[in-house]
Length: 67
Image 1: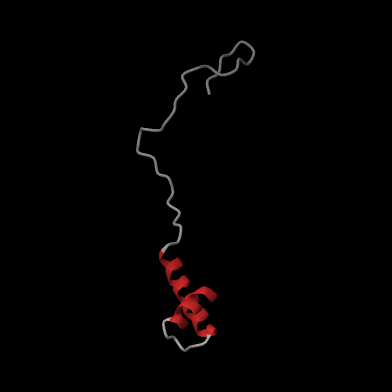
Image 2 (image 1 turned 135 degrees about the horizontal axis):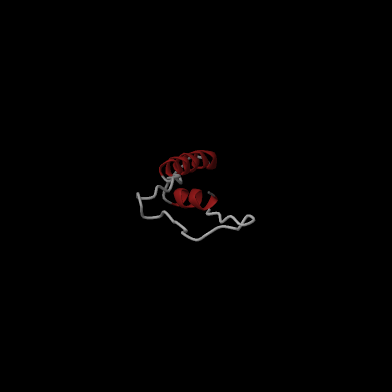
């Protein structure tokens, strides 16, 4: 912010550095409000991502199981 204030003073700004800090903080807050990360849950298309295993599971005694 010191660099911003130096440039503003060179352009003729006669305010204090505190005024510059407030203005920069407000600009940052405004920018962040419009650039937040948004969580969008992943929704699959029906039937495209379903996996099916036709293999058999572990044997329990003489009985076959499927998972």
